[in-house]
Length: 76
Image (cartoon, rainbow, N blue to C red; front, side, top):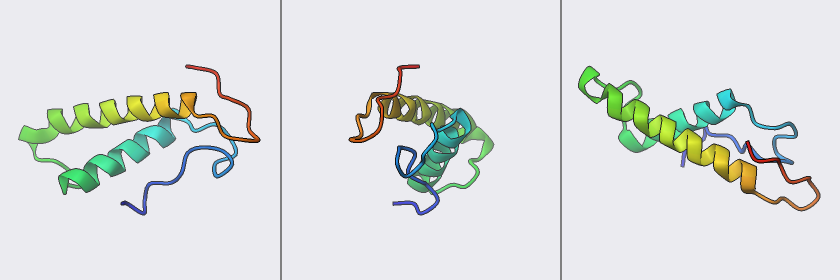
């Protein structure tokens, strides 16, 4: 999909993904899907809402994943 998006779960990322890591991945995803690196002013709000929604979904996913050999993360 997008080579700039890195895996954010253990053991690939040994420490817990930060909010910054999650937001960066969400931004890369929205850029790839929309085809815009930076949206025009009239698309800024919808672009930012999409990044927020994807970051929230990503954080929930990471909080709920169970990875063998690694402790389950506590819900945020």
